[in-house]
Amino acid sequence: MGVEQENGTPTEMVPASEQDISDELDVKVKKYLRGEGANLEALQDKKLKGQLVIREELYGKSAKAAAKAEKWLMPSEGGYLEAEGIEKTWRIKQESIAREVDILSSKNQYDIVLPELGPYTLDFTSSGRYMAVGGRKGHLAIIDMKNMGVIKDFQVRETVRDVVFLHNELFFAAAQKKYPYIYNRDGTELHCLKEHGSVLKLQFLKNHFLLASINKFGQLHYQDVTMGEMVGNYRTGLGRTAVMQVNPFNGVVGLGHSGGIVTMWKPTSSAPLVKMLCHHGPISALAFHPNGHLMATAGMDKKIKLWDLRKFEVLQTLPGHAKTLDFSQKGLLATGTGSFVQILGDFSGTENYSRYMGHSMAKGYQIGKVLFRPYEDVLSIGHSMGWSCILIPGSGEPNFDSWVANPFETSKQRREKEVHSLLDKLPPETIMLDPTKIGTVRQSRKREKPTKQERKAEMEAAVEDAKSIPLRKKMKGKNKPSKKVKKREEAVARAKKPFLERQMEEENLSTKKQKISGEIELPKSLQRFARKKATT
Image 1 (cartoon, rainbow, N blue to C red):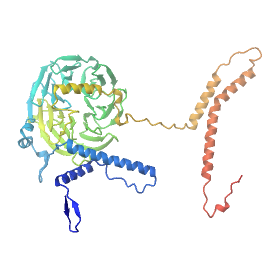
Image 2 (image 1 turned 90 degrees about the horizontal axis):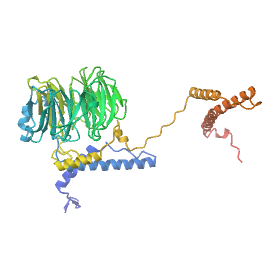
Image 3 (image 1 turned 90 degrees about the vertical axis):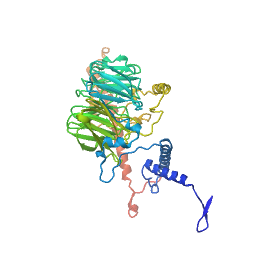
Image 4 (image 1 turned 30 degrees about the vertical axis):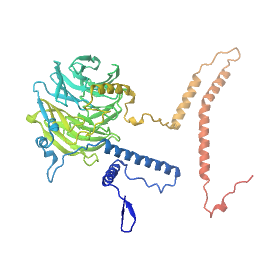
């Protein structure tokens, strides 16, 4: 089908819907492209030019594939609060949001008040379907967030400091007064982990099936929950701490200490991978961005700092104190202190965080922990009188991958996923700061040349060794002092020989380099005065 233009040439007419789709894909491709392509015309090296052309083509193909995946596989789009005129988003109350959202979302906004059992700590499964709560006075419960039903709650009759889910909702660990315990979803005690001691904080590394804990003596433990084997037990040497978080990108555990130092650990090393001074006072909270390259720290010096973990540099310093920090799936940062929660957002894409929302707890409840619920625009708050949930538009990932985390999975799917995750379990040796190095070839290091003093010391040591070798006693006439001296001189000469040969080789190389550099081509006006080479 064609349309005739003024000059009489017919042109094909593309349907409007296809044109719109192609325009939308072009916009998404620009989002994923790595900036403008390099200008390769000025390059003289043909080999390098060919390599760069192939790389540019690969970048274009990957951007198109990512744009198509976003268009067809991720249909839902996340939204944010948008203010009109001089209105500010952080002044919008939860009551105003609840009036505008649908009934299903409004059910996610609630307060549970249990004054005799708090303060409470929380944890979610990776799909966000189930929540585990632990009260300091011994109350433990598992809640199905889909229908808001309590699966199991029970009283352990002793202090509970922290609670964390293991690989799925069937098992969870609780840090109690003396030891951490592992329970199943029916509340049955399965294990008592006495080797960990009196634990203050727990974390679970889901890709490695490792339960990490820090106890009140500053000891870091790693235990494999599949085999029950203790993988690592290290003394941090920096005192007691209750600030602990796992980097989801590489599985490295971050600890915040009372000296303002943040250390990063892996289970196969007794020394920290990184030791960085972040604040001029004790670290009060720590959080990692889902991409693993951004870290937020809060200290008693009333500063919140954002760090680039690729360069270990401060990106931004914000005023304020935070007792607890957490990043959402879309990169929002929640800070909680006293009875006030503040949410910061990076809307420019330049990792420059600014105020987005705020919320004050009713009756001055003291906040203990803030935690974003995966795949939902919900922030859960554990406080001194129970726990609460508030709506934070744009915090959760709107599209879930059922192969990664399925909030609607059946028991059959859960069993299959458990088997697959056990087969795909990563060994502790794969935990490192840069996991992209796994599978690459280690570059051979160039041997550094020893200095003159080092060579001299080596030669003297070899000579001393040669002199100290005892000589065998021989027959009469062959054991004269003169012969002994001669033999010792020969041994010293043999010891010196490799050092002197190496020195001669280096001197010959340097003279050759000088000769080559000396053979400089003279200008045409002086070439007739140059000494001509003898022809054979």
